[in-house]
Length: 295
Image (tube, rainbow, N blue to C red):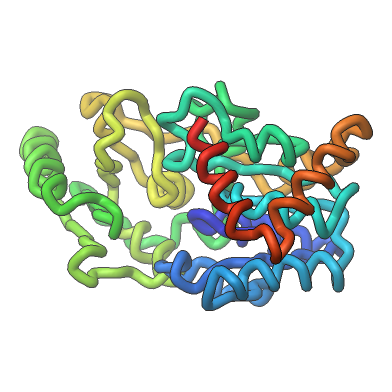
């Protein structure tokens, strides 16, 4: 459920290719780069209510052995109400937890396993980096002395001028020609074209303002898979040629280790999920959850 940074697309591809069944549930407005809607295993929703109903339908019709939740922790009660005994994996990807003192109480109650997408989040759960699709490999045509930098839609505009200046200074020092792709201006490379596009460059600048530690973006991991060198703004004097990654098979092995909720937690989980998902008390339940998750 959910497909933050397209993390579940290669996992679904691997599962389907190895005799298993996979469905990805996502909202259209969260799929700004179409990393999910182009997948044959996606079921897209246009609204929050449709999304909740798609969760209920998928669990009822498919009877899954595992549920993997990306970021949408507020829907955990719905999942548990529909599937009292199915193991639930909660996957944090950064912004929804990075500056919290602890994981959300909803996650502590309903999730059977908590994992995180970047190494610096390990205090919240076990690290499982986003797997990169097999299509990302060197396609030929590399031009030495070139670098590329992407600005995503969520980076504040005030930051782009500062990061561009930093990149230009590095290019002058290393003798590189810089290309900037600014998604905020509508400059978007289709995901299907990204491997070929990245392969043309020697370097990628991963400048997202996360200067306290080398937290690599998805495009940086894709660039490494295509053979580029990566410079991160946490240390602009260091050149990365590799970074820890997980494979879809690692996710499958993780699922095999999960056996479902602890028996002692099931009554509390079911009571809480029924209260928080009952139509008659849904409005009150949402207020309770908002207050609870601030803790």
